[in-house]
Amino acid sequence: MLSRFRTVLAALWLGLVATLAAVAAPVLFAGLERADAGRLAGNMFRIEAYAALGLAAALFLIERRLASGRMRAGQGSVLSINLLLVLGALFCTVLGYFALQPMMEAARAGQGLLSFGALHGISSVMFVLKGLLLLVLVWRGAGTS
Image 1 (cartoon, rainbow, N blue to C red):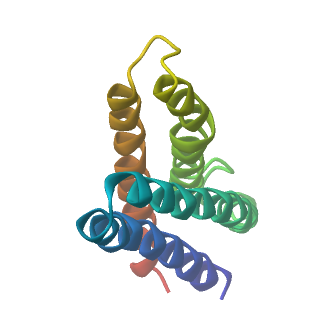
Image 2 (spheres, rainbow, N blue to C red):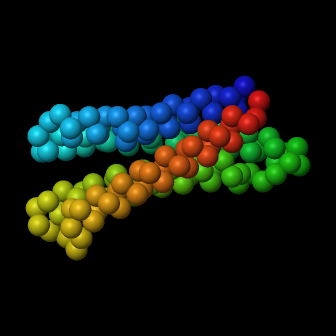
């Protein structure tokens, strides 16, 4: 039951990431002025980043419990592949939003070493990587019952 709940949470997180990337952001930039679209997209990515912190914490706790049970049964380590996938997605959130977002704001003001475009590119790569890590986590969870 706990592994199913983990898979559902991971799928919800993946759905949020995919919807933002494939639907919400493109629609905003297609229908609004660039500055307005950027502001609204930034708000949506902020919401996703904070939701990601909560989802990652929940998934971490679930996966630690599942991995501990497997370890006690002699079937693996407490450091599972699924736990690494969760931590990787969390890292992508922390770097991609919480570290780079302030740097992007500074770059807009003409400060910092990297341009806004370069920082946005790095942030986008982190977002795509997070989606891929979550996809693998969901895929792995879908294979177990």
